[in-house]
Length: 91
Image (cartoon, rainbow, N blue to C red; front, side, top):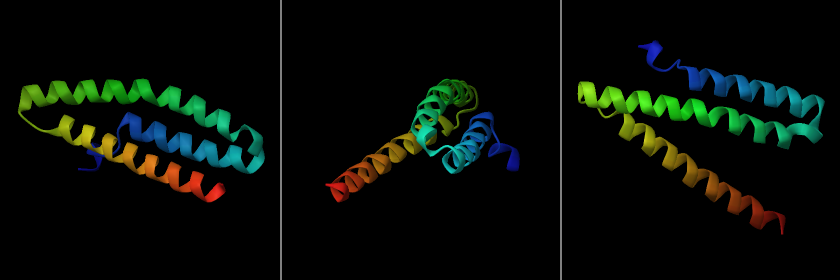
C-alpha cells in the first residue's frame, strides 16, 4: 500500500523541497534560481511517470493516468490563484 505513494517523482520532489529549505535559510538570494532548476529537473520525471501510468491503464483498465492529470490540473489552478492573490497584495 505505501509503495504506491513512494515513487521516484514524489521522492525527488521531497528531496527538492528539503534542499530548497536549506538554500532559503543559508543563501536566500539563490532560492529563485534553485526553484527554476528544480522545476526543470522534475518535469522529465513527471512525464516518464505519466507515460508509465498510461501504459498501465491500457493494460489493466485502471484510471491512474486520468487521476494524475486531474491532480496536475488542480495544482495548476491552485498555483495560479495563489499567484494572483499574492500579486494583488503586493501592489
